[in-house]
Image (cartoon, rainbow, N blue to C red):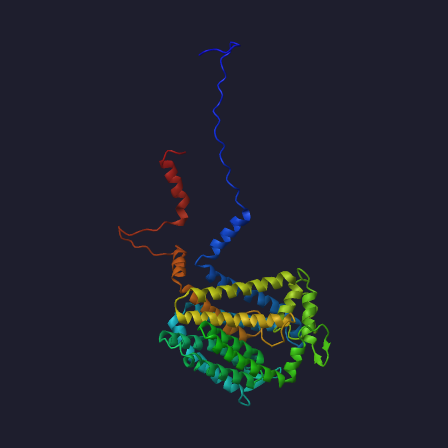
Length: 453
């Protein structure tokens, strides 16, 4: 090798490699959003949202019923846990109904549509019979079952309209009759107006509004033309205006929208204003569970129609937003079940149940916030009242059954079945599944057989 002028061997320079391009750093928020989107699109998402959301709403409702009803029970010379025990009993019965409905096949749900409708109409007629029906807070819509137990048949009318209306429209769609407007309206609208008339005989306009929302939801899902939809909506709105104008009590409730003083002109807005007071005093995280001040006789119906106000006072903005998020998740899951199915009955029934629960939650919460008139409807799965809780939990069971009926969901649930307790064939050629309790032992023996110590 030739030397350099200094007599030292030449220094060999390293060959310069081209710079490797740096990959752009992945945004953690984009990665999180991608993971959330993938989880959101999984087959079991709607199933878990319905089960988890309904259970959380019911459990939190039981806690708030116990907290909000103690003072009312003591004022009536009853034990402090009186209303809570009745609600817990209704929740247990409703849980059994939910489980039964979630395990029923779709054809059995369709078979129950007419019996449930006939039973609801029969009970709603009995309400108007003297000596059988009874009035509560000015509304003649209750039947006494003996002792302190009562039933409100109009709550079961919602479930009846959903099941019967979904079965009716599905059968007409299968026969391709929905293109004719008379088949779109008859007999769905006349039967719905019959139920509305029976409800309005007792003066319960809040339940009538929910039933009207279910009717419009079914017509919308059935693809009613805009002119037909607008015509039915106009007739319903005209009837509603007449019923409001002819009732001083309903006009007073309408005048209390946005009221900030207990006396707003000629209207007594005590309940609406104290509901706002309860929400305003809650702050961010509330005054603490059981520490509400408004439930001490200031806020009427604290454990029924205005339980959301007590929730805001004791659990604060965080608690109320959590309740809203749970209802939003439940509504989204219902829409997803209705949109992904190919069975017309499942689509209409799931859409009707979602419309029912969402509309009732919006009307109740809107009244507590002072944005809507007080309609006297409970918050679904949350407020006190067994008559409202039982059909609602059965309707949740419908949604669970419909979500389980999807082929992708059935396959995913079959994969996740536990392996413990499975019987194995004893033949020599029988396929044996892996045992979970000796997984580490198998790994250790495999490692030793490969020469590792």
